Amino acid sequence: MSKQVLNVELREKTGKGICRRLRAAGRVPAVVYGKGFEPVCISLGQKELSEAIAGEGGRNHILTLQGVPALEGANVIVADLLRDSLKNTPRHVDLHKINLADKVKVHVKLNLVGTPAGVKAGGFLDFAMHEVEVECLPVHIPAHINVDVVELAIGHSIHVGDIKAPVGTAILSDPKAPVVSILGRKAATEEEAAA
Image 1 (cartoon, rainbow, N blue to C red):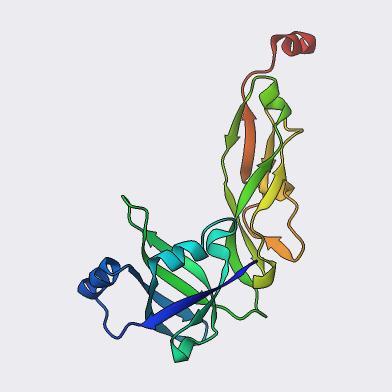
Image 2: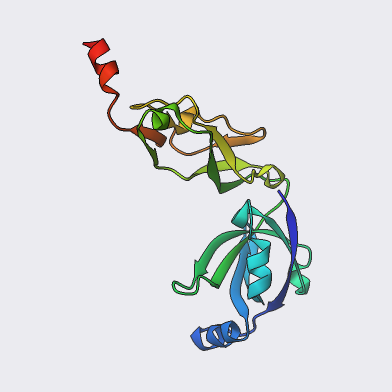
């Protein structure tokens, strides 16, 4: 997973008024927390944050903080991100301080590969689960997990337990949960042959 450096500033005061002024100045209020670590209120550039979490991997990028002595060189990942419902700009972000030697739990997007045989036969693709929870070392966080759907026929599904976890990761989501299914009726010739 890629690493990005973020310049942050300490927030001495908190509250709605202060946060409103920060957002008007193009900054995003944030909190850094972690195991055995006292939470610290900071702010960071809205554009800088958006660029750091853009692209593949998104919120799972490892971010290195600089600008606040107590957080200098700290590695974090985005734990929660609140966006403006109209502008889709970041309004508040929770950053989880991590140790690169300890495993973390994150959500990773699933990427469907290929055109299912069932879709070619007239079925409809139902992509029910777009991401799974995985546990791994921060350096092993995958940008996405590929799911091969080429052989998927009408009436068949791929479940979480069918997905091959990337090296160094363990998938924690319910193995019985359906990820993708092909819906629809089988062709009339197949039904007649079965009768």
